[in-house]
Structures are given as C-alpha cells and as structure tokens.
Length: 273
Length: 247
Ligand SMILES: Nc1ncnc2c1ncn2[C@@H]1O[C@H](COP(=O)(O)OP(=O)(O)O)[C@@H](O)[C@H]1O
Ligand SMILES: [Mg+2]
Image (tube, chains in turn orange, purple):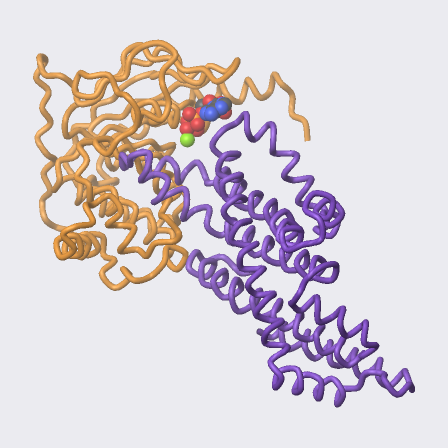
C-alpha cells in the first residue's frame, strides 16, 4: 500500500497512432439515437473513464469499441485499423462477472489460455489465481464465490490472454463499498504493473477520479462526449487533498447540468405511477 | 430415489387394496403377485420380456434422440426452419403418443416397425424442443464472453453453446424418454411377440390378475429406475455444478 506507485508512461506524441479511436461515431437503435457524433482517442497505456448517468450511452460506446456493435456512421479504430468484430486484443469485462457456471474458478481463469501443454497451462492459472488472491478457491464453482471474488476471477481470466486493451463496463457497480474499494486497489496495482490500456465505464465520480488518467464526461440524449478532463495527480490519490476535492467539485458541476436536463425531461413527460 | 420408494409403496398398496376389495379366487394378492414374479423370473419369461422391451426402447430412443437432436439443431440454427417447424414441434409434442398408434398401424401394419414408429414419434418432439430451446436460449452475455476471447465458430459451439444448453437438452431427453416408454407400452399391448406390454396382455387373456399386476410393477420399476437413476442423477450433477436446484 505504501509503495510509491508510478503510472506507466503514457505516450502522447502527436504523431503516434492512438491505441483506440472513435471518429465521428453515431449509433441508433430504432428511433433512439444512443450515441451521436462521438470522437475520442485513447492513448497506449492510458486509463480513461467514460463517466455519465445511466442511459447516456456508455455501454453503447464500449460495445462499439469491443466490436459487439458496428457504428451507423463514423469509424472505430484500433492501432489505426478499423475494428472488425470482437477479439482478445480488446478484452471486455462485463458488469456481471460473466463467469461460465459449468467451469471451476481455475478453469474459468484458464479459459482463454492455450490448453496445452498442460503443465504450462496449470502453472499460469496458479499464478493468476495468486495475482487476484483466489489461490484457495480455484476448485470452487462461480456460484460459490462472493460478488467481489467473481469479479476478481473475471479480471484474472481477462489478464490471462494478455490483451492490449481492457474494456470494463461498470465492473464494480453491484459490489458493496468495501469490496469495491479493495477491487479498485487490485485493479490499480495490476494496471500500474501491466501497462494495459483501460477504458473504464462508470457512473461514479469517485471511481473515475480515483482511477483515471483522463475522464470523458458524457452528455445524455443523445449520448455525446461533453468534456474530457486530464487528471494529473499521483497514485494512490488522497481524497482529502484540495486537488482531488477541486476536481470532484468541477466534475459534479459539469454533471449537474446533465442531471437537471434529465429531470426536466422526465418532468415534461409527466410522472405516471 | 425417495420418490421411487414412494411410488413402489403406492403400487403395492394399491394392489393390496384391490386384493382385499375382491373376494374372488383369482383376485390379485400381494402374495400372489410375489409368487407370480418369482415364477416369472425363475422361468426366464420376465427377463426375456424385460430384455425385449429394453431393446425396443433403446433402439427407439436412440433414433428419437438423433432425429430430435437434428430437428432441434436445425430449428435453433435456421430461422426459416424454426418459423416452419417451431409451432408444429410444440404442438405435436403435447400430443399423447398413443394417438400415433392408429397412424402406425395404418402405415406399417401390425408389426415391429409400427411399435418402433410409436416410440420414435412419441419421444422425438420432446427431445427436439429441449435441444431447440436450450440452444436458442443461451444467455447473450455468455455468447459475448466467447466472442471477446476470440473463439472460432466451432469453439463457440463446443465451449459456450453446448455446455450452456446442456440442462435444457437433458431435460428434453428425459422427457422424451418418458414419453417413449409410455408409447412403447401402448404399442406392445397392440402388437408384440415379446415384451412387458405383451406379458400384460397375456395376463389379461389368461384372466390372471396376479400376472397383470406383477407386470405393471415391472413396468413401473423400469420406468422409474431409468428416470431417477439414469437421467435423474446426471441431471442432478449437471445442475448442482451450475448452482441450480434440480426440479
Ligand atoms: N440493443 C439495444 N436496443 C435498443 N435500445 C438500446 C440498446 N442498447 C442501448 N439502448 C438504448 O440506448 C441508450 C444508451 O444505452 P446504454 O449505452 O446502455 O447506456 P449506459 O450504459 O450509459 O447506461 C439507452 O436509452 C438504451 O435504452
Ligand atoms: Mg451501461
């Protein structure tokens, strides 16, 4: 905990191709425009949070980056090349842990690994189990784990395939605050050590401030990116420091507008029980 | 297991009540049934009947599982096939297998093939339904897990779709077996050179109530044994693994 953690070097040379990019991307579902004209570049090794209230299109953006969805207009690029379908270079961690219920925890973690040679496979799984503090639980089934343990197993399963990018969709939203705190710590430790690019979806200002290099604040209906904030604060972040307090206040103010807009909209439609 | 004991006890109880209610000489009694069973097994008659019925159900059910499996897979994989055969499968599945008996006799005459036909159509559609719904109802989230890990189409099927569909497939097979077993007994009553249904008819023709009840017990026993000990145990293991309660 007390080790001074340094963020991985984020390369930001102008000429460099971003790890991930959305260029003028729009996506509609029927009559509903979920995201409209979104442009965003994510640098190698960067931890970027997509922050916004529920329904603003965060998951849609993540699904576009993952390749689960295709944009109606605009382009989604990974290392400068158009994304075509999902793949293990952009591994997705879902809001629910999405472990396979018929496999043990160890088998789940080894899911994306080559199954042969067996000794190497087993040894890698052992290391990964240790990495997420599940050493003693490899033989259990997912339904026997707590929510936090499941999400740690999902994290280990993702890291096993050594993806360049992790796409995380509110992965800790359904956990209790203490567990979430622990997982923040785990994720940060892993991110600082492994130099992955992370796109992290959240609706929690605290979570975004705690983890991110940059925070993309979203606007609702249709989903757009309202503002992108740099967070140049060392890790681990001290939530009592004036810098953090200032940043949180600034984000809250930015988001207040959005919440007010949502409230007005609901008011217009009238509240029906 | 418990249910098996309970149904056996129930059958014996029903038999004894019948025995007590009737005062005629050839009325069934627990002792008479036991004697009949002992004699039937000693002479090898009941083993032969059990064997013949087991052989028929094995052949019929294997065929039904293959055809039903194929029908289910086709429906899950191709929307036009599902549109066309979907409602038909669901509807026909609800039809008691005995209703196929007249059709079987019309098409195949009184013979082995008619009985086999009854068993196959009796269980085929239940299997198809289980396979179809199991495959079609794989949670989208789990499909996406396979996609993000970059599974090939084939791996997606073997590592995600089939294991996810397994509980429903097993339920379909179990249902299909039980329908097939009933269909077989109905078929054997009409025509068979050997088998439990045939022994039942023989008992009736001879006016031997003890034999009728003894054979009913055998049919019940075999049916329950396969249902509970065969499918039941496999199903229980598959569900327990997934943290699901067995029905
Ligand atoms: N597959 C879909 N079909 C129809 N509407 C969708 C679909 N996915 C998302 N939406 C709609 O798009 C909007 C944005 O959704 P989403 O990206 O899930 O928001 P968020 O993740 O920020 O809560 C919502 O209004 C949602 O109802
Ligand atoms: Mg979402």
